[in-house]
Length: 226
Length: 62
Image (tube, rainbow over all chains, first blue to last red; front, side, top):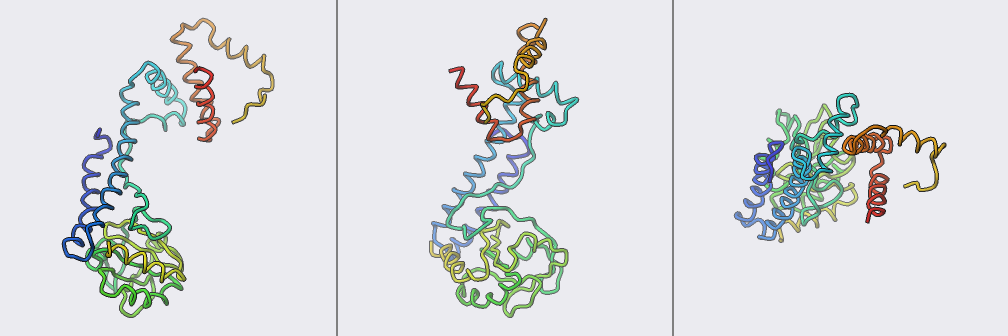
């Protein structure tokens, strides 16, 4: 792969981020080896996205045919005076987190999207989302907001004994983490009046409305039965 | 993609296009065309329309 945009290093870290928690669950006998198949599915897609982006940069930087040279030169000629042409100048695109396809881990809308790490309060103490995840959630954290908080105990009972953590956003709930989000940075990434499942690698596994708690529990059990 | 006539003065447009190429070498004409394609593509903007136009142009060539 061409290394534009520091993609070699970034994708290696993303590979490790994706695999680490899955491997820990399988080695710890919390999940079967099929969980590891999602590593291949997700990071293969990530590699393909990277290759697609860097191939485009390569074709701009080093045109392979007279026609490619013609258009590259045309873009450069126009870029001085026209803003639109500057957006076509491709000397390398910044690396950004990959989007993952549907897998065993997908359990609703927004699955496969990377979430922003944000500053929070967890049970009153300052902590960012990543710190909350690594301290409490080996596999995932289910965050309930609004009217879904009332359904959290049902979900907690259904998933008892599994390496899943639970949190209520800006609301107390017995047995669940109390996440304070004054700035609304986490709320903006969560489903209002619903459940948002955050994976250990800070990807969204899916969002479900409050009424879908039983279906969500069944989807999450599949992670560990694989 | 629009294929029904949409140019107000077809003969006038065609003449303007040819005049723009007057006195240019083959290479200079090709470069002008490439710049023109990029400028026009930005007027259209819509990715699906652009893809259909590219495919139609490619078709006529084959």
